[in-house]
Length: 125
Image (cartoon, rainbow, N blue to C red):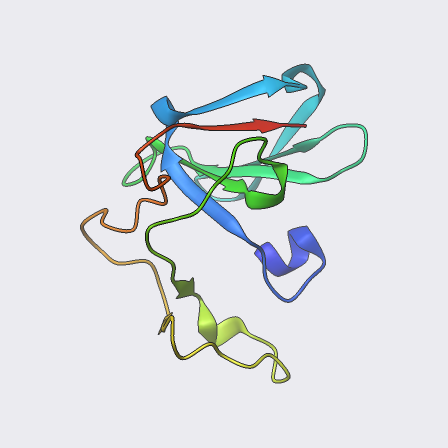
């Protein structure tokens, strides 16, 4: 779904617990839609830029994924990974140093995407 929502080969998202994410401006501009069962995507109602996606039920419903380019604060994840590599276009070279996962791990939240000091992240529309 990310390829369609972004109109690109891949999307650069971070993920944090909802309690650690806040919009500091532009929240009134956001619109949302259910992109698939149990998933809501939010985007800027003025320019259409994707902002977040979130599961609304089940595992990970207490987390949000956000587009990294919207951040106002520095964000350097302690861990990185590539997921859904089976969806990569044929011309996309894999970064074997990071590794590649077909799907999200079934348990554990080690790759939580927080900043190195565990700080919350701020985004603006």
